Length: 126
Image (cartoon, rainbow, N blue to C red; front, side, top):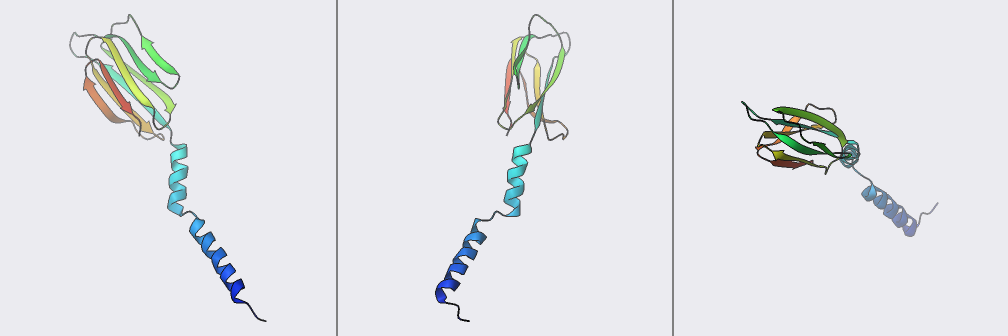
């Protein structure tokens, strides 16, 4: 039984094309992981002493959550699920409280991502 050089060459080309087009295990895990990542945002707004703040809004997956004509020293809200790239924004109408933005990824504990004292703060989930 004779095998021609052309047959061997074709088999080698097929084998090499299959070998080079396959994904590594790391690529498959990384691609599937980014597709299933789920995030939640926790906003914390607070003042100290006798100071208050009012008229604030935060971004949520369904639009803006707004609280008008309500004076307080502390407020906290958690929203989600969110996807990578979501822009978390806080706007304060009256007062200059401390604003904190926490993010949770895939049910892990919340981690502080941004903090400031003032009228606004934003953080983009990356």
